[in-house]
Image (cartoon, one colour):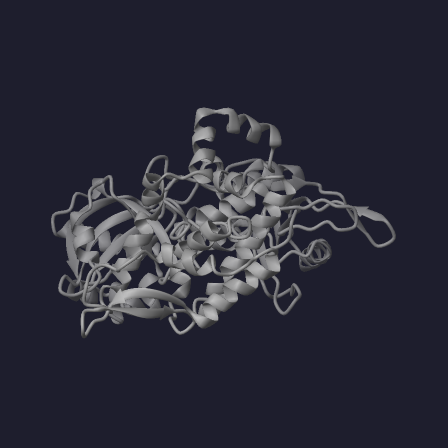
Length: 517
């Protein structure tokens, strides 16, 4: 949906809406303390190792607000300049000195590489000083919810900076704040109404992170718990109701299986969890790539030595590397996952209590007589299995090409209509069959013309034989640069996951547009 003033007006008249607006317009001390609790914990925890005392004298939000109140801001440009200056010159914070145990001023700014990790606190202090120009960012560890809100309401979102671009991550808040300010100005919202919109009204449109109604798992992944950061205690004390955010591959999909490996002194697979969110990049979190996990099942432990002695598992890079480095977050193949379950069963595990990797079944015993049968019985069911909703695609989208010629790509995914300015994230061109090289070349050229015209990054051909997926390579689609899967192959979990990771809804529509739609 897009922002609906009627629905928003109704919300503002409800008791819930009134409470939310009051909360952000005139927050009581108790409300602020509740809002700041996680921010305070974050600040205290991360400075605990650097300084002798476990607490900080004063509050980071208060100190940011105090410094920001000294600056006159009367325009968005001045607000941006002030933020950049705070980053470059630093904000004075009081913290206990490790050697003398007396309070000293600590300058927190660009020299402190983790500035981006404190954007929640910094933005709240700035908002309290200049509410018309800074909105508080309260999506730390929940960036996936922010992207869903932006997608749902058509709010543009610039691509997130890379993990190593720490200055870019610090300044990324400015991009988000600018998009929010533009949205609220467009719809006539006050700063406090915008806060209520983001943190109360819009949360009804995001996927919950609990373990209820999870989709069937399509893949299994390894995740790792460290020894020096409390992970082992957290995992061992977890209950079936526990929900945590955890370092994970961004390719994880909601419902997937996560095998928890605990490093020394445990050095074993300890439990099996479920992903309750897709994996996502969080530019304001140190570990960058995370997912929400829940519903742990304590399993029979499988030691690293046992894994290394297994003929199949010993070949896996993560196991050879003792679950260190990027390979530790790689997916398991169907056969590897089954092999680990076999080891657990050999140690007394009840297999019936463990989740099974599944792929949605592709019906092969069907009668296909024409191209429309391919669409109805193969393409559209596959789109549903890949997570798409009906509103995500347009069939036979009209597109003008050449001298006013009107063309109709069979499926335009993530389409944006606009005379002469149409676009889409992906197109699928369907045919009854592509049994000859000539038929395939003609279908490729037809799909390519649509994809280039609509500025797509991905296109696909679908026929009774299977599906061919083309990703743009060097700014073009190349005839020989594609992945192919027969429909029968998609019944294997690994093959289905490859397609899901390439053209699933999260892969194609997971990132909101960088332009207003």
